[in-house]
Image 1 (tube, rainbow, N blue to C red):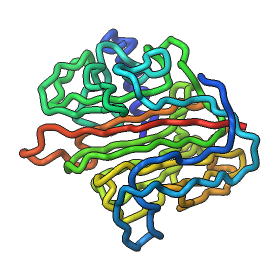
Image 2: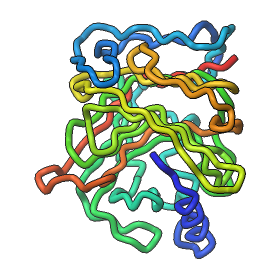
Image 3: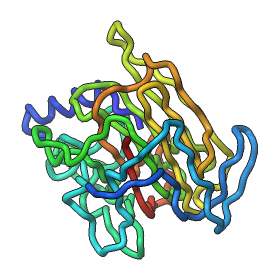
Image 4: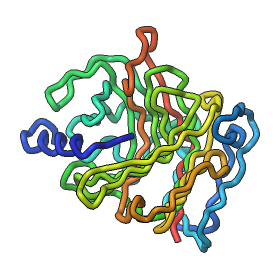
Length: 298
């Protein structure tokens, strides 16, 4: 979910113009129970089933402390833990850097039946940025309610995991990712994102070069029928490495320290619309389901 520095500057400019404005416990990180089988090696095939995925094995030794846990077992979102927009929230928000089609609104976020639901819906909405959007959708983040507020919770290193069931509809862009808490910083860790496909998950790391330009590395894992059930996506972010997991299986690792972010970050889950292409005309609604989210640190 690329949040470009241009997009952040646009958001800041909109604010200036007036257009937009934990938990205790410990133990070793593990996937918990969620539907789906461990993913296959890149380029091979795997199918979903009701069996539990394998347990991720963090690359670094413990002890690990559970610092964020939400099983979404209640009837409403814990707003002390989650915001429902990016930092430039004012009656909603969007990602200007990706030219997405959705305007995020709190009423597109719901909790029930043991999961968090982020619902994208085709309905024309006037954004507070002066643009009109053909879709609304939902997102949650441990970040701020507004540009000048304090983030709810930030993380510098740790093991991040979530059980997700992505939508099957075309034109959706679900993502689980980490974005710096500091404004206008290009580093980013994309734990799982699905841009233009529901069968292959993309893992991406973005960083800033010494000359100020940006670069990225990306990895693809699949094919897997991800919409058929819940799957566990995780990342172990250490000072010297970043390791991605799908259903408990390590699938990619980055070890170049120059590429690894070293700053507090916010955790984000969102269902974007229209990147890299818009939904077909016969798609009017889609939903990203989140069974649980957990973060450990040591």
